[in-house]
Amino acid sequence: MAEVLALIDYGAGNLHSVANALKAAGATGVAVTADPDVVRAADRIVLPGVGSFRACAEGLRAIPGLVAAMEERVQVGGAPFLGICVGMQLLASRGVEHGITAGLDWIAGEVRLIEPTDPAIKVPHMGWNDVALATHPGDGGLLEPGEAYFLHSYQFLPEDGAAVAAMTDHGGGIVAAVAQDNVVGVQFHPEKSQAYGLALLERFLEWRP
Image: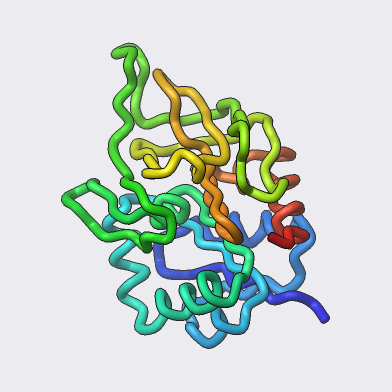
């Protein structure tokens, strides 16, 4: 029986591109949804996100029962979860963009503005950059080193270094991916990362954390 993958639609993600990339990676049961019942029954969950942390967090919480359904399915039920860009940042305890906003608090940490050590380095961090795996990535083999496409001005700083799965460099180290049990978040955009991103999504569809 085909798996159902819930691609969370809360008005803050590049849904069309992500859905197409997931289908290109082999997903057959992609449900673009904000329905808590669909999320509760899903085999896998993907949370995209573009824009500000605050707007994304508010958009997610504005849909009755959606966050509770995600927590039930992922935190309790163990469904594999992938957060993309701001969808990864929402895993944090809080973000400080436009004031302090609570995140999902699935991986303790804070989302703050990138502050490069070299003043010649521009923010946002935009374009292709290396993804280097942490010594113990904790992602169950989901991630691989390579080059991916980034577009962001804020970075996720986990409280526990063990949650860092991969790093990149933009005037200093920036967390490129986080991982904890069945939850992985990537700061880059797999749907814009060509062969590297497609391979990641293929592995996610087979991932059994």
